[in-house]
Image (cartoon, rainbow over all chains, first blue to last red):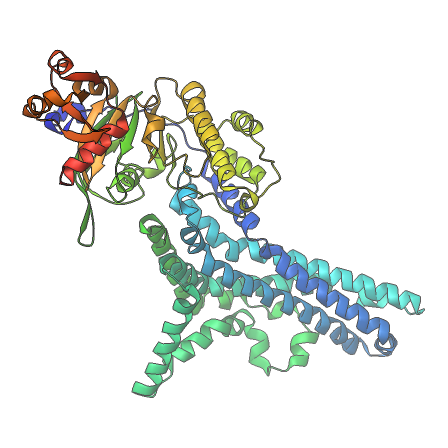
Length: 319
Length: 287
């Protein structure tokens, strides 16, 4: 201690020899714990998709119990018809659960960097030896890894439960339950779902990056800041130049991955019957997808947003 | 070894100067009480030390630059920067698990030991705990971390008197080992009177007093001046004068005790007395 009167400190005393700093926990360990804590905090990561799955199972159960003749009609169809009749409900179930998961991801991202500043818990997180990089990595991994994995497992389990349910009902009504398992190309279907889901997640990476960035930057109402400026820009473009490039860009970012990830199917005719009934693996076009400019510009944008979020977390103080 | 060293530390928010070229030095093994009115710059100084905010000037904490080497620094520094910052959704058991998972110097058994002395249950969520219990939980977590520097910003705010006393006892007996450094700010200046080894008063972004408690005992004296000695006492330029039961109590800086004894009853001022005297003086309030 020195009072202001004696504050002349010699240069030699300032430069202390490097201290033996405590070794850090392995980065992967702090990352895994940080991801775990995100799941603790955001239980909707699994509750929301699981609830939708349970609701769908309940709906199908009630429907099949009330109209068992549907199952009898299935037996009377030709092979193509049977496949379609089985694949469509399975795809619908997967679609609902996946859309739920994307919505959870969107709202998660909007709150991920904002919530800890609003409730000042950032002071607690920052008091622990977990770097901003690891923290943001853990948060980015929720929509990019955790949610897709959890959701995919829920989708598969839901489809299996529905198949078992149908099997039981068919046996009860004296029908050939084996038909379900013979006609439904289950492994192929799951591969297609997994592939499509993965393509979509990579395609949406810049969207999640943008939402995290707004969440890390906004002092209030991150949802408004994330949506309104973009909409306003699109409207201004339309009025000022009578063009719709930004709007096209947004639409492209919303569904553009379908065209490259499933180039085979879309090229044909877009006939839903083809899409649903024959999901031959040969129609997946990962080559086209992974060499598409849209994917890579998106990933670069996501990377830039990510770097910006790490920086914002360092500078931003509680609200 | 020096724990904290700052030279020309400065922080400006817009037009207001939160820290105005502060020089400070805290040696290892000291317990520093940082005292100042609201908005004096205490929290800004602590945030700079903890790498929570960028600053101008030179600052080294445990030999590291807190802004650029924050990740390494946080392994050896622990802090409570504000009251009630524990995430409300978290369960007590999750808090223990998480800190044990990420902190190389966290002693879980020790934290459980502190918690066992409270009524906090492992299954409770932070949002269901009382304000005092949240503080107890946070202190239990922090005191179980074997840090070289512990920074506490108003650690006992919201705690009742009984627990405040217990807290400082635990801090001294179970945590402080003579090599660790502790920096604590508080509004309850009386309660740290016998805890701190060093004292620093901050006002308007400047350090207005910086001395050890030993020096303080030697330097400052408060005298209950008899009415017949008042003018004689004023000649000695008291730092501060107040009236108690119609008699003048004057606070002197660096005046020989022998001289003062002749004026009246001499005693060592409390931190609170000294604080009031210094703040009144630096704020230019008329006596």
